Image 1 (cartoon, rainbow, N blue to C red):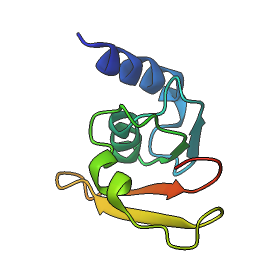
Image 2: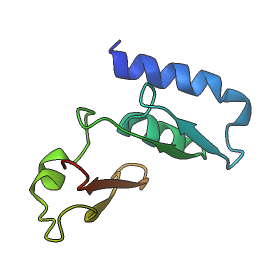
Image 3: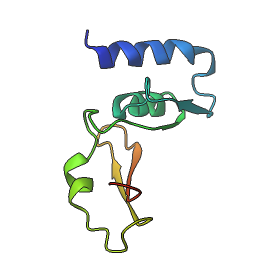
Length: 99
């Protein structure tokens, strides 16, 4: 079992009592991933977390090529859907000191 699936299983165990309750899961970067977002959605949760760019499924190539013409403070979002679950996924890029 990969690290990602193991973390998904741990997260799902932590929220087991609330499956299908329609609540939210808020996570730090340890448990935040595209996979955990989709798993949480399948169980009726909204997932909020800072997903590292190295996560499988993160649109790094797209967001890395977005033009941010206004410089510092400019931002852009990408909305996608998981084809299997229709989970809506949002990813953001912004210009602070760096992209």
